[in-house]
Image (cartoon, rainbow, N blue to C red; front, side):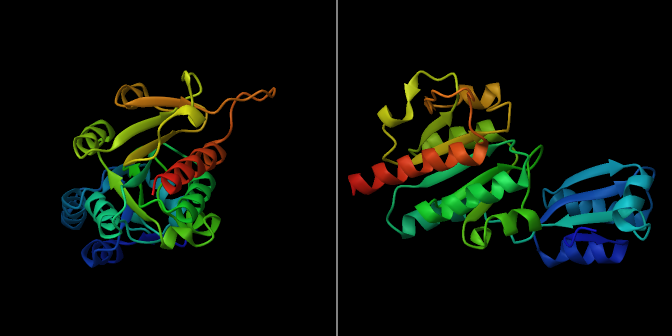
Length: 246
């Protein structure tokens, strides 16, 4: 059983009231009484994803002790995008952000956080839906870096990128079909680096919201790196360029 799984109506209600970050709420299909409606309302007000599932799925998750309700709490609390930008401002540094576009593997997420902490990334942005969330596996794989790197959840990737562009950040996407070698790109200023999902890469709408697409050239028989390896290469190039520009 997941250490971050909270189940039972009273326990989930208190979790939501506590202010602790929650990845998702599971509600058994057909549960509609007052306490369930209260939990649903609390979750929606907090912007937490609610998923209605078959009761047998909850039975498997919670050994049958769920009362029709379960929640997956985050291993650590999420930050806000505003807090990430404020951190960069307080350090008197141009913002350095990573956006993960529907990344699904928690081990890749943890490895990316570990590199992000090493190179001074101010924060990592993830979608609330169709994305890996902060959990115990991510925390362990990150070697504790998840406790130091701010992570913010967003509901709309395209709108968030537009807002960040208006604040002066350059939106750069990693794409195997790009024409620009990452070593020839200007990555020295305020920047959002987008890392796509395993296998599929960035979504079309995300790609269309990039100011520049860059690629990592390869000469071997394997034509792509996994998300965390590609992210590490690109983050260190950004780190190098930022260091030279200071």
